[in-house]
Every structure is written in structure tokens, then in C-alpha cells.
Picture 1: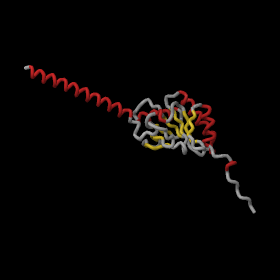
Picture 2 (picture 1 turned 90 degrees about the vertical axis):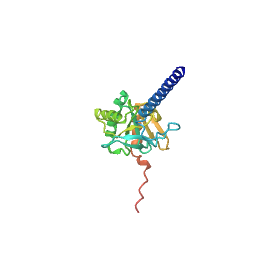
Picture 3 (picture 1 turned 90 degrees about the horizontal axis):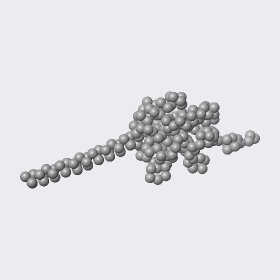
Picture 4 (picture 1 turned 60 degrees about the horizontal axis):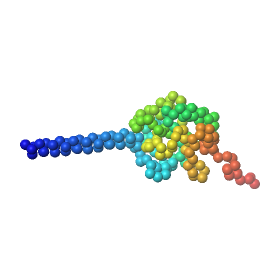
Length: 199
């Protein structure tokens, strides 16, 4: 009788340990998978310096979202969050400024939605598109993949590469507007090669 009780106690203890182990594995995996739903591309700069010439994003242009990389040396990016009140004021002003600049623009400005309140990529895209429709935004739109603070610490933040190849991050709204004149327009006439003189 004592032997049966010992066996039963051992089986109960073993069962409890097994259940606890399974539950911890299950909850750990679900947390990991929900956090990685927006991380379909390898994340840059988590352990070292962030690579602003290779920012993983989901492009929302077209029917389906595509995972691509954004290079701020080629395309300046304005990081924003759809829920950010400052962004809601700033982005329409930026778009108005770009409209007034007209044909002088030689680089596009891409809006990158970040600090999403969801880990579900389709929900993050829906939130960004709702922002786009509400504020009548016509600028290209993308969703940042991976941990938001890899690239910016606050929104809005303008990220671009200057003429010396250094990455610049601008967070002041007035300075963002001023920087657009320099980074999006064609170089001044002075830098052009003069035409050869006629003989």
C-alpha cells in the first residue's frame, strides 16, 4: 500500500512538473511569435550601429504589402506614428510645402509608420492607411519592421544622408521643414558644369 502511494505521489509530482514546463514553453512561444509578426525581415542595428541604408519596411503601395529595404541615402524618410498628435499636425504641413515646391523636387520623401500599437502587420498597415485617408496624404507610405527604437527614438523624425555620407536625424518640426529645402531639391546652379564657350 505504501509503495502504491509513493508511486502515485511521484506520478502526481512528475505530472505537475510536466504541465508547468509545457505551459512555460507555450506562453514563451506565443509572446515571441506575437512580437515577431512585424519582424518578417532580419532587423538591422539591434546589437550594433543601426544601418540607415538598409531599413526593413513593409511597402503599402499596390494591392499587397511587400517587404523591402529603405535606403535613406537615396530616399529620405520621415518616421511617424498614426496616433501621434504632433505628426497629425506636421505631416499635412510637410505635404503642403512639397506641393508648393513643385517640380524642383528630385527625391521622394517616404513616410515610415513606426511605434505601432499592434504586433499584427495587417492591423499596422490598416492603421497607417486610415491615417493616410484621414489626412489626405499622397506621399509614399511604409511600415517599419522590427523594434521601433532601432532607428528613431521619437516621432516625427526626419532621417536622411547628407552630402558627406553622414546620417542626420531631425526631430524639431521647424528644422524638419527647413531641411526639406536642402535634401529634396536639385543642387544649386553654381555646382553645374559651365557650358563650353562657342568659337
